[in-house]
Image (tube, rainbow, N blue to C red; front, side, top):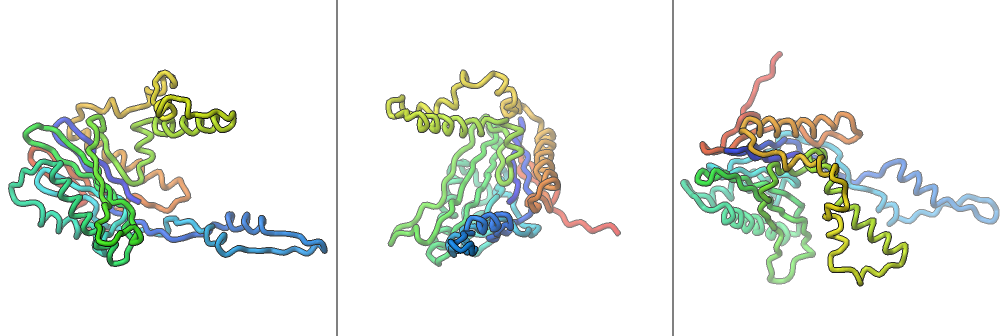
Amino acid sequence: MTFIATVIAKKGAALIADSLVTTSKPILEYEDFYKYMESKVVKDNNGEINISLDAGEVVNLFKSKPSYTKDFQEKLFEYGSHTAIATAGAARLNNKSLENIITSAKKSLIKKGDSTQIKTRVQELAKYLNKEANECLKSGNEVYHTIFIITRFSKMTQKTVIYKLHVNRSSPKDLKDGEELQCVSFQEQPDYSTVVCEGQNRITEKILWGDIDTVYELIPKVATQIFKDFNINPAGLPKDYVTELSKNKDVLPKEFYYDIKMNKLRELSLQQAVDLACLLMRIERDIQKYTENIPTVGGNVKVAVINENGFRFLSGHELKSQSF
């Protein structure tokens, strides 16, 4: 896991990324195995205890969980004078580090003084990454989910535009003879998203959005369960009734919307944007001290800004000697 974020200011943007890479492996918790063993204990007519185990069931008890972390993976990159890329998710694609892939894409796709529109630049990068993903699949290897936050500040419009690009998880089994699999998708982020983050960002999302995402997921589930319990046929309801119900402001108390801080984050100075990005990183990193999970956010933290003068790092990019 990781934490990456872009915070939009009036005249630029602040960017932040940690450097930890988390390796996962299948793990069987003692409590899960104990409960499974209890369920398999059977007494026969003579009072003898028999235990019958199913190999497939035992295998399914193993869950993929973080096991250890490695430090100093590059996750924040300049991608042209006024563009930056931050990455979260898999650290490699097609047996190459993302750092090498982004460096190669930059050399191949961006020329000096290039003023290509950001949407075109994202489309070109998506095509480049999709080629790498398909080469990976054709070699018999899996493609794992990776997210790119692409941030561009325009000197002309004095506006920051952000895209999220996803390299979606894919398997060699998904390939069809002679066809290229579309593994990459992207979307421009809405103007109201003044903070865009990814990775281990659940606390940040709660701070910025309150419980709105939880409610959007919960209301349709509750409604569907009510239909099931009382044998109500939803076919007679208007199309998308259940989905739209969760967005109906009359359903929720007005106080619910007071917790949404995102809409109030406007007109930040560049310094405020940097401070907020660093605060969110500290929150996501420090909360790990009080949980049972291994640290998955931290290490060397890089902070950068983009404004009319272009991209520049503020911290985390230079080597430092230890004090003795």
